[in-house]
Length: 467
Ligand code: URP
Ligand code: ZN
Ligand code: ZN
Image (cartoon, rainbow, N blue to C red; front, side, top):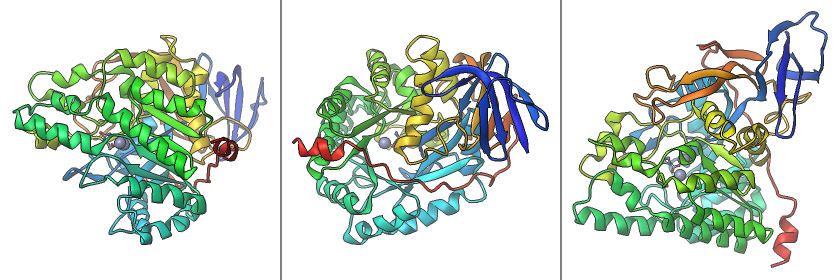
């Protein structure tokens, strides 16, 4: 089947031009002006932006966490992603019974038959034993080219510095990029115990016990560990200037350090946690939301590419699940829903307000994640031979974000009432229309597992030798 997406403004990370995209089967066949429409289904994209499908490299679907489980599985979560213009995710699988392979098999089974869009997995290592380390090479061969380490969530996910060094060091042999959740778990535990002892139990104390220094210290330490191991590092969900400075300084030294922020850190503030009743619990995530002054710092970090990616860290819990932390904020399951709303929010609050250009938006939500996480050249751009993962985005279509209309399986939206000008009209995944004018058109199970390739920064040797 051939489709001609006609007359839109084709946007990549580097260019914007009015033209046509010819899709043949699952791939983009040609880009050009006034392409022949004979024998094709024509999609009129006049007035619309024709962008590569978004990649969300930070999601937590069907994940056991904090004594409960995230509310979206691979069916509902990826359906919601599709409705928002996301055509590929990289979710976090976790070591199971000490085994990486078992973790990968477990997450493969969760996704199989359910996913609406293509998916890959990072592997979270919680117990870096010799046995686990020896499995790294095998999972890389299966397309898991990234390993994630948590420096917080003691007793559940956190690893020691020794464990981090062991994993970083092993990637020299296995290949693979290490991702890190950078918060100092000991500082958090100390602060939490003190707050609870003082009777400070409401949601806002979640943020007060995890100040910027908690994040900055861990970011700095992780970078130093990566530097000693002479390996690259990717810092997930950066929220503030103090942490960003550490990344920027390392990059200024020439070190291969990469960073990500998430939509909520760009548009929400810590004030949400003080909402009346227990409403603030909906906004509990880690690291926590910060003050409004950090927004511009993060936008600027994106423009300068110290932060390469904007993800969602989609980790949804119903309000009922959040009740686990009534009377003790430390028991509130951490995480927020967001997989569906990323593009409209970034366009309205980012591009419309001159925080990013449309090309920078494409770079941070598609091209750069594809490059760093080993999905390029099939994903992350619109070019001959790439997967026809394409969003026809109407910059004038106004939407109001609401739990009443979203597809996520969660009973609130942290962006409730946000009015955004700009929304997807049609979403293609490998040439197939999976969302059109408000209607999901895909079936569970059509999404495929994507084997990812290794990312080895070219300047690594030189930068490290200079030390
Ligand atoms: O609060 C968050 N971010 N929950 C999800 C797990 C994580 O830390 O990424
Ligand atoms: Zn995290
Ligand atoms: Zn996360």
